[in-house]
Each structure stands twice: as C-alpha cells, then as structure tokens.
Length: 453
Image (cartoon, rainbow, N blue to C red):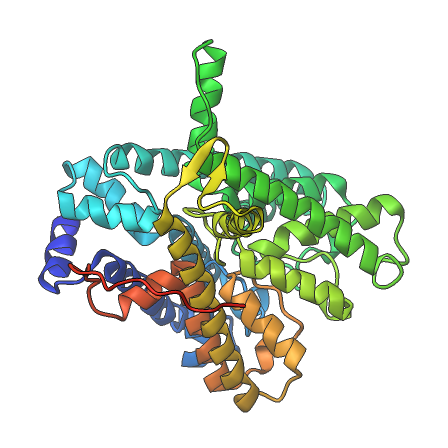
C-alpha cells in the first residue's frame, strides 16, 4: 500500500527521476531533523537547535560525517539509532529501499524502473530488480562480517557485551556506508597503531566505496571462474578497480613522504605507513581519522582535498566526482597527447557522450565548490585553507575537518548542508534536477574551428 501510494503521489507531480531522488533525500532529511529534535533523542540538559538538527540529519543521510555537536554526548541511544538509520538509508539510497519493496509487492513499472536506473547509475533497465536484491544482500552481509570482526576486536576493551555489540554494529554500518560517524570523541585516534583495527575499517570503507555494480560484477566473474566458465570483468569494473588502487597507493606514499618528519615523526615506519594508508583510504569517502587533521602540512591537506574531490565510485555510498570520471578524464588527456580521436581502454572505445558527461561533471563541480567557498569566505571567520578543506569534505561526503564545523555560522551550516546533499546525489544530477527537460536539437549548424590554448 505504501509503495503504491508513494509512486502514485510522485507520479502526479510530473517530476523527472532525478528530481524524485532529490525529493526523496530532502524528505528523509526533514523527517530525521524532526526526530532528532524530539526530547527522547537528546540527553538531559543538552540543547539542539533546528539548524544543528538539520545539519546532523543531512550529514547522516548524505553519509558525510561532519558534525556540529558531539554525537555520543548529545544524543541518547534513541537519537543515535535515528542517526544510524539515516546512515543506512543514505548509504543504500531511499529509492533503492522503495524499489526493493516494489519487487516484493509486484513487478516494477517502466517509470519505476527508470527511477531505479537513475538512482543506481545503472545503464540498462533489465535486471534492475536483481540488482536491488543483490545490493541489500551484499550490504547486510558485509556489515554483518564487519560488525562481527569489530566485536571480536573490542570484546576485551568494553565491560558490557551490549555496548561492545552496539559499538560494533554502529561503526560497521558507518564504515561501509562511508559515513564517518563515530561514537568516540576523537574518532579512531586511539587505534592508530592497531593493524587489525585499521584493516577492518579500511576494508569496509573500500568495499562501500567501490560501488555495488563493481562488487556484483566481481562476484559474478569469480563464480563463473570457479565453475570453469568463460568470464571477464566489465570495462567499468576494471577502470574503477585500477583507479581506486592507484589513488590508495599514491595517497599513502605521498602522505607518508610529506608527514614523515612532521605529524608522524614519533611513529615507527610500520605505524607511519599504516596511518598514511588509513588516511588515504578514508579521505576519499569515509571521514574517519586516526591522527589530528589540523596538524597536517598544507601540502598534505591539498592531497587530501584532491582525494576528496575525486571521491568514491558510481553506485557506491560515497560522493565526489567519482573514480570513473577521473579515470576517463586521464584517458582523454592521454588520447589528446597521442593525437587519437577516440578514447580507448581495455581494447574498447568509449562513446563521445561519456567524455561530454565527464567534463560536464568536473566543470559543474568546480563551479559549485567555487561559489560555496566564496559564500563561506564572506560568512565565516576562518582561514581560506580551513574553509576550502571543509567545503571539499562536504562535497566528497567525507567528513574530515580542520576543526571549524562546530563554529560555523547559520548561513555557513546551510551552505555545507546543501553541499553535502549535492555531493551525495551528484553535481550534474543536481543541476539537471533544477533545470528543465533536456531537449535534443533536430538541426545542426555548420562547423567552424576556434583557436584554443
């Protein structure tokens, strides 16, 4: 009944699929804001303004992790569970969950399938239902494994079994959804020397940031290989995996090099590599930290901002321009230098519209961030580096901060809230949501060269 009424209501509005996705996130954020404002959500004596509740709900739903209040000190167990629910909904995507119930009740209509395709960044309409079920199975399986691993790690740290279980589930969901929310006051700085803990959290972050399309493709190929049947990974999967690995390794080495005699000077070589690796992984999407980000050198902050701008992969729980977008941009540059007319990858040629979309995403993202930074520079009393870092973190739905989040003014919090929503949905999708319908021209003017460079 809910599903039928839901699609009937949004159908009457005459909205495009991307506009429905935006509306869905806005509705969830609004409901989350109201629930966090309830007296049952806050601990006695703790005040929470409407703006701060909105910011927290948006940060959870957009799986960002930026907070203007201390989660463990401000919210009761009920309030924390509201945040955890928002993280799970934001990680999966509201339309994904609605689509799942749609499959249970009856087959999806063409319009509903189109909505799902736009939400999941899935190019084909067939097997959308199978993809939705796979997403839920993969999500809950990985989160269960992650929670179990954290429980075994923390079993001796906490006195209460219930607290250990709760902390394990909360941080497993937060890590896989790349949310960056932590019940510890200083994130994971207490565990920066633990290899086991770092590997558990980073594995959850990486799996959540790869994207469900990549994970399902890898699982399918592995199953076929085990049954000794021919199989190969999709070009998208190969590109995402290669770009992700390169970004993680290069980020680790760069941070290790520039922080070796700075913030990491008191650690051993092994600990330096582990901390650098953790920050390289978490900077692209998650937002956890095992060191004080405020103490990083400016060049390290610049590297983190680049990683945050690139973000996760399409169809994942993270934001940014996406790894595939960055990868195609690099391939386009290579083709231009080599004088090739087409972009070639893994013995395949990419269509021209892919390149147009890539530079559309990069340009719109850069312009959006620039406008937001200009506004924040006029409303906030903070340095340019701190403001740019905060904006990049919000856009990449990362959650890292140089300590200015809690001191943001009301206009500043609203700007960051809009940035988090834009980063989660996608800058180009957000731009399409606020513009009219795209129209294909039925004519073409004569071509004429323009001098470039």
